[in-house]
Image (cartoon, rainbow, N blue to C red; front, side):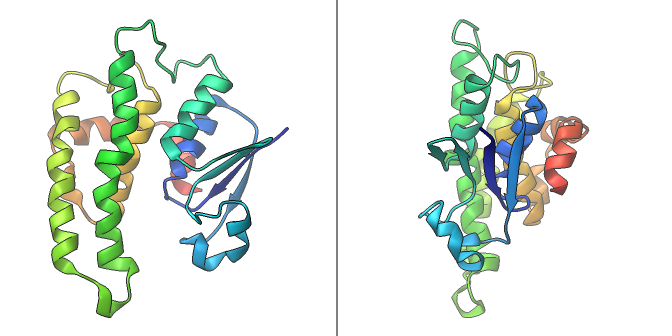
Length: 203
């Protein structure tokens, strides 16, 4: 049975798309304009939340981008993209996976909403500016983590890097270029050389 991923270019669905590409798994991609709950109303039959991504695998329907990445590496592994429970960095790996969206990407969604998505009369530069600063403060943990490491955990590229790197993709799309502090800039430059990243970014 074919995995189907519902996707918008450079939305959170880039995380599972990138994971699928890194793993070499077969999948069907349904690409829609953003935001699909307004542009592609029939999508609400697949995902009533109207959010992106949505992965359908048989009877399974998943909508959380980091969770989908974890599902793919565990369901269709073994894969070096996962960190196993017996490895020393397992806890750090899980922390990065959950931090990637709840802590790092979340403030950027408010920057996006109040600087671009809302109608002109509802935009709020103060809210967008406050959450921009919040995001930059939270990204200090990545600057620290990459000071002496090529990757975030386990001394190899994992889905933790995929999930956290997406926050950098979104930041750059919003013009938050000051996030590229020295260690993060070096880390992200190396990540962007990966062919699967380049394909996911362009799709």
